[in-house]
Amino acid sequence: MIRILFLSVALLLSAASMAWAGENVVAAPAASLEAQAGTRMLIDVRHVTEWRQTGIAAGAKEISIHDRDGLAGFVVKVTKAVGGNKKAPISLICARGYRSSKAADVLAAAGFTNISDVREGMLGNQKDGPGWLKRRLPTQPCKNC
Image 1 (cartoon, rainbow, N blue to C red):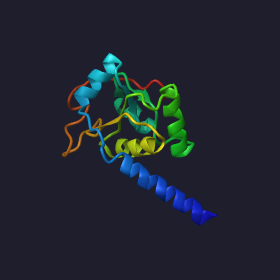
Image 2: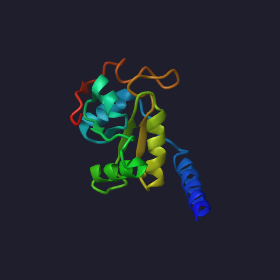
Image 3: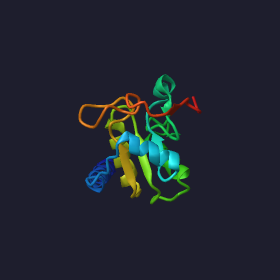
Image 4: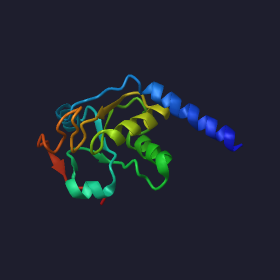
């Protein structure tokens, strides 16, 4: 039974990687404009302690990938945030792009089809850009801290 469960999880992760192979990376300024215009939901997937330290991107929803119910809890909360519409346009942001990419994989495996990754994140990285904070994009205090 455990072996079957392990194989199922492995296949699911493999499918998630394939589903996200055509990933859509968006720069922080574009994500900010879309969030402010209401054309794409921005979700900050970082931990609550990070939200307290830096604030969150203006217009972002606070849905941590570090959910107490694990990744399944994260998916449930995102699904609720979009009213069950897995085609809803979503952008994900974390600190430097690693967790937002992983969150995109998880959501793609759960059937979400319109995901963008703000891969430069809040703090930036050398490959993708300086990040939300260094670009001086608007932030807001954490609402649920």
